[in-house]
Image (cartoon, rainbow, N blue to C red; front, side):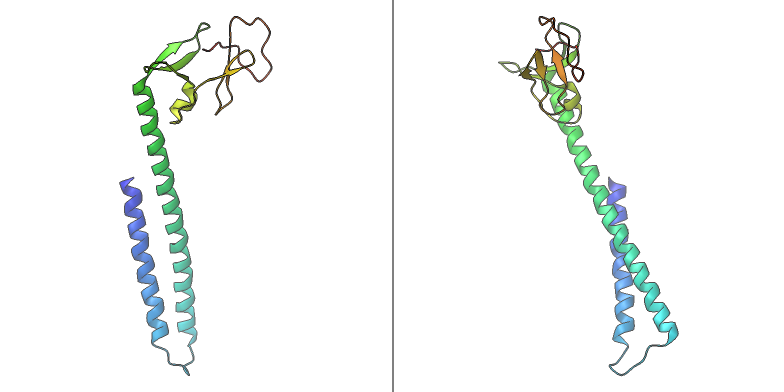
Length: 154
């Protein structure tokens, strides 16, 4: 993350330098002056460099945002793992159960993404409201629908 911040600072400095150079050339002109071919080429090169710097800056800012979101999700996942016990359902499916009373069973897949998704009652078992994965109740002998798992849940 520190590298991303360093890259953002470097890009910002480059953009300021390019803008200063561009402004310096324009400031040197008076209303009646004509630009030479060399000056026009210099201005075009500076304009291209400024556009590239702006694009790089935007990409860097987006990368910093993604890293921040990923770090936040990882922090939430660690917190969830710390406040829940990994248990196995009757058919052996791993789920996370809270230590609070009454306990809440949450989807372990979503917990790894930092989401606390309590399993909800669903047709023949329990379903995660976020990822829609279904943990089938072993007491129900009906076959699972094609999109459902045959794993039991609480």
